[in-house]
Image 1: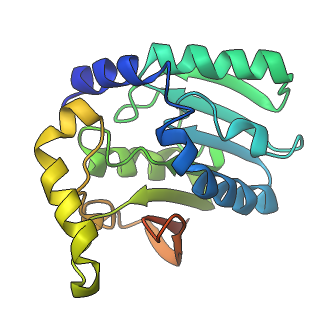
Image 2 (image 1 turned 90 degrees about the vertical axis):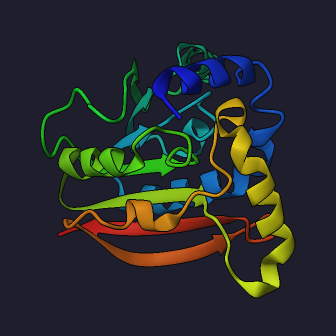
Image 3 (image 1 turned 30 degrees about the vertical axis):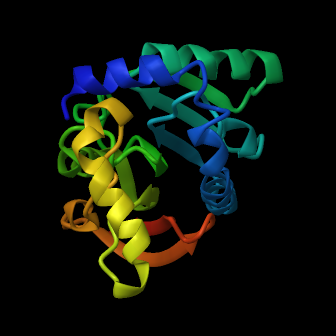
Length: 207
């Protein structure tokens, strides 16, 4: 999957995203926002999309959102304007593989349902670690490939969808090992989330 394929896919999805994929990812977004609200500070949301999570942050939390899709960002900006979300500092068009922020710019980073979409997720995780201050937290919510015998039905669906990754805009068979190799980040929490445990929340600390 390349960045142009991602942009084309999300240009197609933008008009209906909130009512489709957004509807089944709501629990994970709320849970991630709850974690970050408890930490406070300045937050970067990587892959802010249509801004579905933005109303879930407390007013005291300062949020910057980036996304590679102009169509998605336009939807997010509309939410910010209509809901008067003053805690949202900026929404920026940006490739998460090469962020235009200095080292240690943010207290915490969220990446919700984005790492199985972007090209080079390993590089994105390295960039997340770079722009995060020491001691800061990364909250990842994502769907990861299954290999447990008791989850054969979900595994079969993931494998069947895998060849259509570019059209769908996400990798259904995404291997979590691809984002676990950043030396500065230590996994400190893991939760399976509804619906059906399809999504997983991972929480990392920057050492």
